[in-house]
Length: 263
Image 1 (cartoon, rainbow, N blue to C red):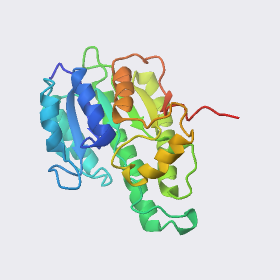
Image 2: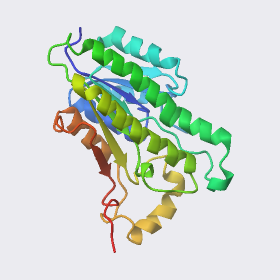
Image 3: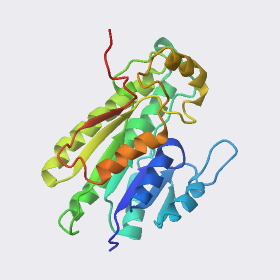
Image 4: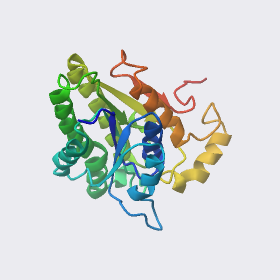
């Protein structure tokens, strides 16, 4: 069995997931990257573009091209990781999509609602369920084994946005998923955490960048800047390194101070 720790990162091909995968490789983890895109296109990077960055950190990289919204893939993913490495030390549930078109809550379509929840909530929940079972199987078999699960949600888990209701609902549900997994697994020594990013500068937020540039200028974010994917990655690495081992169920809001209530 591989002696090195193994991290599984969903949505690893770009943005926050990419930064997380690279920083975990620097921290000494071998990386399993999951994405619907293996080959890069003119519109978006693929997992293979990440491969050289991971291997440059002297880590092994296993790219898996799967759509987690199809829950049939969950057992395939776990099986491939175990066949390759024999263990999963960290699951980072980062994969998420936004609505193709922002629309008022009164115009939200069933198709958009179902698509968003299939990836952001349903698929993530059942992948976590399968990974959790594998972690429980290995908990007494691997010496020094202290697996962890991290859910990347959003400030939208707690902040209303009536033009993307389905996204908010998916992240709110995922926040509860983080809590119940933390509750269920704590007695077995498996911790679960939630990270809530604020406004992070990625391709997902690119369509609304001008809008939020203006709002940031007006004082929306106390720290007066966009967050970067690396801001989230540093928190993931800190959790992975055991700095919060007595804090299962913890919510980390990384939003530049947007959580501060002001008069």
